[in-house]
Amino acid sequence: MRRLPSSLQALPDLAPGFIAAGLAALFLGGVGSGFDFTDEGFYYLSFAHPENVADNQTSFFLFGGRLFALLGRNLVAMRLATLAAMLGGTLLFLWGASRFAAAFAPGLAPAGPRRRPVLGAALAASFLGFAISPPALSYNFQNAFCLLAASGSLLEACTRPRSARRLDPAVLVPLAGFGLLAGLEFFVKFSSSVPLAAGGFALFLLIGRAS
Image 1 (spheres, helix red, strand yellow):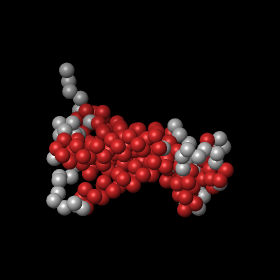
Image 2 (cartoon, one colour; image 1 turned 90 degrees about the vertical axis):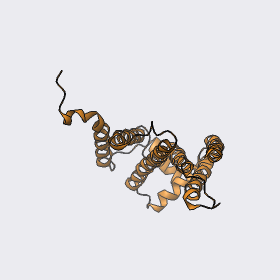
Image 3 (cartoon, one colour; image 1 turned 30 degrees about the horizontal axis):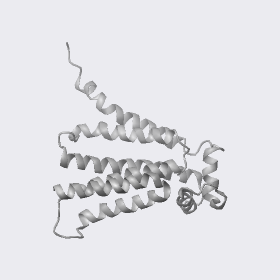
Image 4 (tube, helix red, strand yellow; image 1 turned 45 degrees about the vertical axis):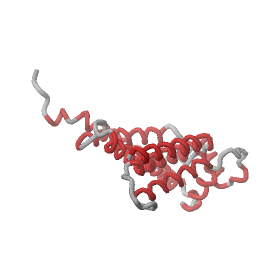
């Protein structure tokens, strides 16, 4: 059989990136259009008037309200901040996970050109996650950001070799990031913060004893 031209052979690797770019153009182009009076409207009202929120089991609306106020209660700016948070959490997790895999399972870590489809697929998944939820910094978005970013920070801290310095910044900075994000998750979703903090602490100790 005749082999496909090299340009066509690269299409499967480039496809996730093309999909992510198309979704980015779609959402950025429509970021100022439409408004959902039910779900999206509820979040904006809870941000602006948290005293009227009956759900006291989570404080997500207090964090979202503070950002909403800093953005001048601009709906377009809030949607962009929500999308940035979703993509930022995904990139932080991908960064930590790739470094963790390279350190402890190099055979599984994508290298060179293989990183592009992984990055494209991760970004496309973030855009699709943004598509199925109200475009406000909702409970689900805050929960997803905390879990993704905290996990990425912890995995990055685990890749650092043991140092004689107790306060080695190379380990302390990502570990402090994990602690802050796990603490924020405590107020956003308590039931997720407990396994996140306990599991992360146990993983870090096990990696530290083995390294």
